[in-house]
Image 1: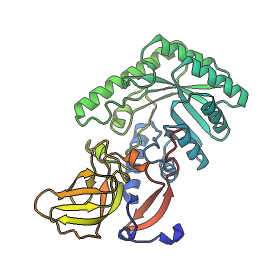
Image 2 (image 1 turned 90 degrees about the horizontal axis):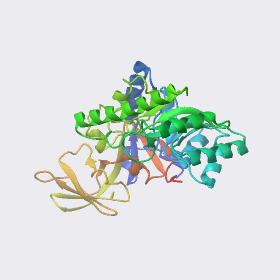
Image 3 (image 1 turned 90 degrees about the vertical axis):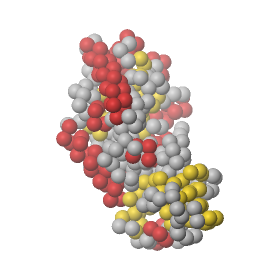
Image 4 (image 1 turned 180 degrees about the vertical axis):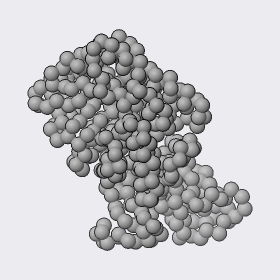
Length: 366
């Protein structure tokens, strides 16, 4: 059957395992955050590594997002091919092959890329001159996550910004930082206290750079877990929240007000005992690194293990009468890596299939 022949099919008739998005919940999540940013006067640049799906990115842009964020150059290429223009690659682009791809992409969209190294900056400047393009640059600042980035508050950060501003073939636009080690802490006090420390480091670094006469137009930071703090800082201009659109169990524990839009539809394939339920969605259908999935609408069941092809459930108390052949939905522990297992996202509205969207950024790790 052609894909369009499945449209209108009831949820329970879709073959499993399959990745689903509940459109009513997705759209409510997108509008909730868009409203916050309209009211705060700040910009949202949603991170698409969570959903990797151009159709969702377009919904976010239509709701008011200023542009999108991608983790990798390959994701940015997929989004540009889908007609998206304003794209930040929140990562360093290193090596001649990738730099050549970046400059080619700059001919087709307004690309922006992170830099934390003077040599890389020089390579980008030289390649941009050869290609006749002028991509935008953000200096990445290490504000506590201890991954990439030049040290916050350092002279090196100031000098790198000044060097970027002097470039003739690159456009220096500002700074970015990511407090990824605190954004998903369940302890609200620890999360917010840690985020404030990190954000202050970033705005202080901005002040240092501007004190040297270098204009900073963009100061980009944060994620779903602390977006509401970032928008209270005068020096932060935009936020890269991504997981809010689909949500997963890990972020759900933070009680942020977003609904679970993402799930994996799975079929019960065995009932070895009244206390055990076995489904056809295992490690090849969802990822467990942030915790095992919840069983949607069946809180009396818990997933206690995943093998390659099977989800292993047990009753929390008593027994279950769910029959072989019944369909259940898993809410994944980690949405980003679960989505990366699928070529398509099946969009459901009012219990029926409305669209099948390509997960165009799936596997684009280069």
